[in-house]
Image (tube, rainbow, N blue to C red; front, side, top):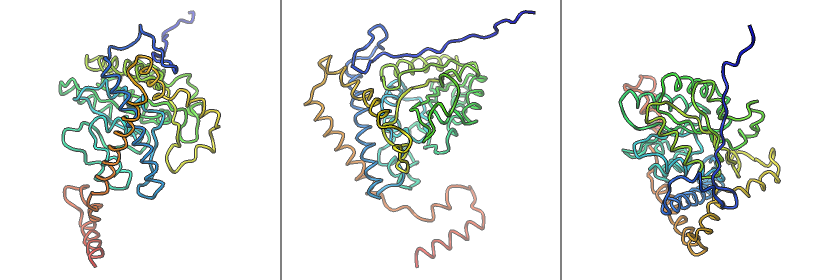
Length: 357
């Protein structure tokens, strides 16, 4: 018998907004001027918040911080596409979209300052706690998406990860589960080119990360992750697919982290200056700014005003962080068990006595 083809597929890449600010009008999503301006303001505020957090860590006022500089479009575009009822399941570099989804900025800072109360979000905020173990959040997103479908909700779970996380077994298990059970889940991979010091080429032999979806019977699409319009359009399509009961989608947003992996990292040891400079020309904020200026929707005066507003807001979050009462040391024993084991009760009493003495 002759050999026959049993499966063929293609992976599409979506780009709408070029680095020079010119758009493909035929692909532009239906956004009004106010929504586009909102995207820009949100991205600028993300960057100001992020850069200030790095400074706080350098000053010893906060612990390790994972910068998102350069990846703002991949988070702002997804946030705008999500409905109020949708759930966010973040990894550890998603503080931008977490804030856009209602998590107070000072709680994000508190978490990275070592205060577990930073994971106690206000009622009604549909966001899971930060997931530091690489890839563990994918299973959470798949399970949540399945539960939303079983409950008859139209809400969708949107879970994030990096390119390195696609090499973890959790990623493949989650996509397999979500594909089989048509979970209401959208998987967003922020492919920033590096898993700490390991380049994407050292993570996988696949030409794209989006094509990994095909093995699990779900669609995958690659987008220019520095193009906020492409991110928004792809997310809207994926969300509509999930809401209609057609199952999950994998979105690979190709972007670049302009800073270190975390403040405990020195990216200069494994990346060239030429590489970083080339990606600065593709900066998502500069790109959208050029589009707005060409449309007559933005100018230097508005930019200065936005910078002042963003700085003021960030200062208010730092003030709220520093106004938090010190955590109770005994809390390290609480909230794990419905009934605390006797050995932990004894340890907690000893700690309380030590602190009181």
